[in-house]
Image: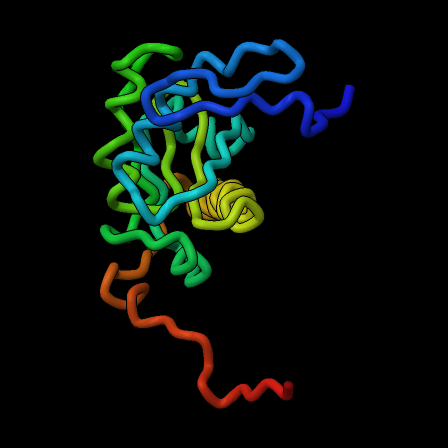
Length: 172
């Protein structure tokens, strides 16, 4: 089965279905998406996954520290990928649980549920979800190799210092 534009359900921020060409219902977690859009006016795309490693840490309610510098792309204000408290899917409890964590990072875990990546661009939101899963894999393997001992991680201030190299020039 393939998703087509006809299958997309268009809604407004009041949870009103504006368009559903195929007659489909929106996901039961649409309220969570709406709350993210309200909490983060800079966000125009959300990628919600149940990827294996990230969800494993979500099940454990364990934030993922910035153990590799590539975490800088996830805008981790506290130097960790935070975990939103548990909320039953499809409920206001879930929708409200993600608000504070998503203000602190562009990628979060959802306790006992999954993961979210956000951005202004749909491609970048999916990419952030992929980075989140990769960071979870690296962290997992570092813990295993290190006998369960926490690896060193980057301070939030160091992550905030990253910028694209100004020395690189693009021709027009």
